[in-house]
Image (cartoon, rainbow, N blue to C red):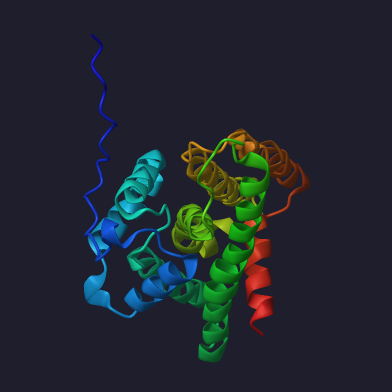
Length: 260
């Protein structure tokens, strides 16, 4: 008789359990949101070690991160994170990156505050909410299997955005800073090739991790369509190299312009 194989165990440490109990039954989206926002102001209830490990695995093996989302569904009856530790750590990296970019752009203090506001509330949260809403609608309407009982939670779609946003944030707002003034901002082809390649890698990370997030939900199909932007991205990358367009320098000029 064939033996039943157990599901693969995630290498990430197990998250610290919260007060959820199965006996309470299903919870509404409003209840989940209220509990999440309440924990946002209680640092002692956050599992920062688990969130930090997730950030590392988003670079090295992003598939393993989504195994824990399946684990959360089985134990807490939701795919979305109920612990805001990842969001808090993301805020730390946003402040650090905004500080570094402000130094590179030589922004005065008030311009730094404006830039920090843009990076946190516009680039990450507002754009993220728009992207999450778009995928929430598209996946539930066009990718959900007809026989499926579950649906895509908006909170999960926003978590997928946060997961996909972190590697580009680190690549473009932190790693790039060490090379921008010394090399990337110059007119040499190698400088343009290096800087534009960073943007290609960052955008490819975002698309791929987004694809992994929704493809991890077994009640969705046709998720391979999420990978389709890869080809236009590659074509645009080649065109920028041929046309002599330095993406990094243009984006830096845009950052500088919008805070003055």
